[in-house]
Amino acid sequence: MRRLIALVLAAGCASAGQPPGGPERHVPPEIVSVLPDSGQTNATVKYAQFQFDEVVSDRPSGSGTTLDQLFLISPRTGAPEVSWHRSRITVRPHGGFRPNTAYRITMLPGLADLRGNVRKDTRTILFSTGPTFPRFSIPGRVFDWAAQRPAVGAYVEGVARRDTTLIYLAAADSTGEFDLGPLDTGTYLVRAIVDQNANRKLDRNEKWDTVTVNVSTTRPAIELLAIERDSVPPAFDNIVVADSVTLRVSFDKALDPNLTLNPSLFRLQRADSTALAIVRVQPLSFVQQAQQARVADSTRRADSLRAASGIPTARPAPGTIPTVTPPPARPHVPPPDRAVVITLAPANPLVVGQDYRISAHGIRNLLGNAQDITRTFTVPKPAPPDTTRKPPADSTRRPPVVKRPPR
Image (spheres, rainbow, N blue to C red):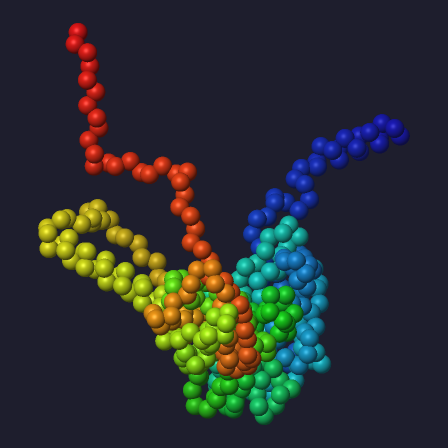
């Protein structure tokens, strides 16, 4: 008996071979089938199904992300119901699919397998529980307005005026683009949120924008400019004395782009309440653009003089084709200003070491709210020269001649 047991164990050890599960996998799970088929009409389904080629994790990649946060069901009638079945995930809207309704279900990036390989692309299926699809949609792009770049992954929702119980959903791709629908004709309120915590709600300090869209005979393309917007009016953030007649005043939030800046919005006084005349108020961006234009003009003149003098310019090596990377998309509207430049009359310059009080009224935020604000500042003394650093050597001077004694 003992010998028989030893032979069985030896045979088992000799045939162990490859460990269970095969070689380690380094690619994310692939979708092998979806139900219902994308484009199907008159679909009678209790749930939509995504079938994968391996077991997937029920905990998506990303801190705090849950499985139901990876799926968008449009139109939405509540939180989606998402179920995990090892290599299969089923999805359905709260209360089930409604009759005669077109649905778009989007699986967002973040699904992983048990080895941590994460899917980074988006998959969408479109089907209808009725005989047709609505003819329209709302394409668009979401931008981070202040940063002037696409808002990747922004959450987009649209509500029809005629039926506010249905909320249509979409997510911006890597270029900020989205397509909301399919939709019937009507008026829709579209909102985009840079949803930092993926809870699909607008929270404090999150960037957002809304626009009203009328869908009638075409697919109206829109642009959403997401930025922080709150009801608190602007306040002074910093005051910098650029020179004796120039102040750079910054605020703690973006200003209304439709605000017309003029000297009447500000008041500058000495410590004895004597007012100083303000001759001009300009957005900081305008002043910076003017400075950049002057630099560019100087560069063009220098290039023209160099060409006229016959001095050769650097050219690419023969046979080489320079690669040109297209710039990322930018919004058609420049970012809102957060600072202004105030110019005083030369007859009443600022005095070093003295205190001044600046006041402003009618300075609106992006929601149109304003309040009277006041701040006191002191004109600083110029920094003393650094005597510890040696001046640079004069390269135009010839080195001294060292006399050597005769041999």
